[in-house]
Length: 173
Image (cartoon, rainbow, N blue to C red; front, side, top):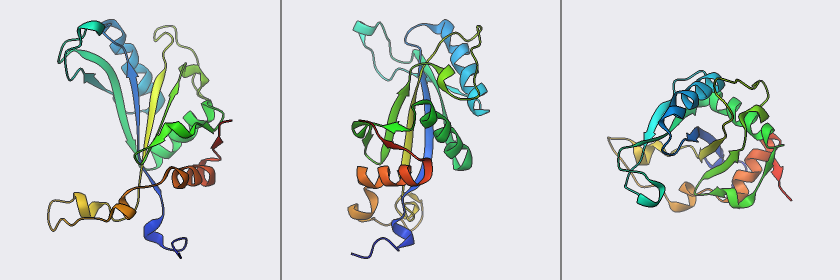
């Protein structure tokens, strides 16, 4: 199959979402937002609980974290920094549904960030989404059309190949 030279089959980085969960501790929300602002330069938004969970002492609508979404060159830069914090090692079970997920235990592992006593010690979750060209055809408002599953779904091996090529990432042993 000659899919290697087809530009429409190339895997591309769509977006990177950084998320910091604070649980039911509302005093940590400004710190989480400040950390995301310091890391990305973008303002973070508060995330809320979608449903009630009495075991975690959460109620629907309660603020439980902060997140920021990045696209384009900024997303690639942040993904490069966060992968570097993980020594460019990726676990295969972190790749699923056209995305890569991994966590960073402490933000001081990211190059360029120093400990700030006002923020404290926090970790974050990184979610990178991937897509192919042509996805807009299925998402646009006018003249919407279906895209074949073969084109829509990106295999974990393809994502790993993209990350190895563009971000010097490797499989974790």
